[in-house]
Image (cartoon, rainbow, N blue to C red; front, side, top):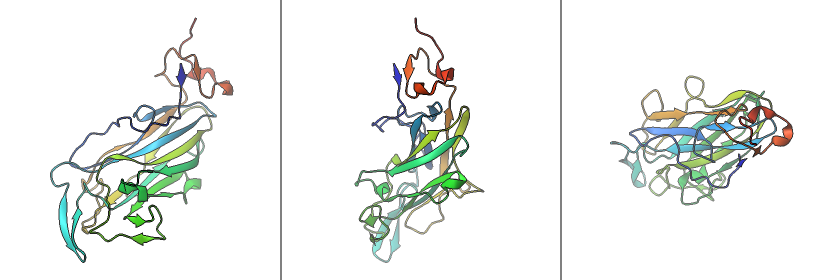
Length: 233
């Protein structure tokens, strides 16, 4: 049995539930959970998953210069998300954004300017042509694609440096204003105003009590036996 930390599929169910406000979480693409089992020397990817609001009031329209635009917390045009990690335990090495051109979040941009401080971010700023390039043309509010369906919007890759447990944190107020916005000029949706409901971090552990009857795993060559919780005769 192999406990693989890198998988191609990103379709596993996440843990948040549809509701009247926005959900955001960090998850393990292997099983959709919010936990990773990883030994020193292992590499893993965490997914950033967003679920727009789905309850009453999640849609609205507003009048803008181009005409009528769709807005509300179920149809988002902008976002700011910041992921905090312990740089003494994990090292960030790469990121990817959603590759589906039909999904508005493909225009989200990875923010790497604060990696040395243990932070990596993702920002959504409208609908650009070409996708994901703020050097191109920004669509007008009446025509732009918006974040209107749940899905993963970015992936962040980390190396595990030492034994122990750490948390991949979705940073929020007061240190960072985790927020989302529509095109209608309403205040940004945040935890403080009830626009964001569930915020779920992820844990990374080298102890791995959840794995039983394991006989081989990625990274076994590191010689760390702490991830073995059962012997097989």
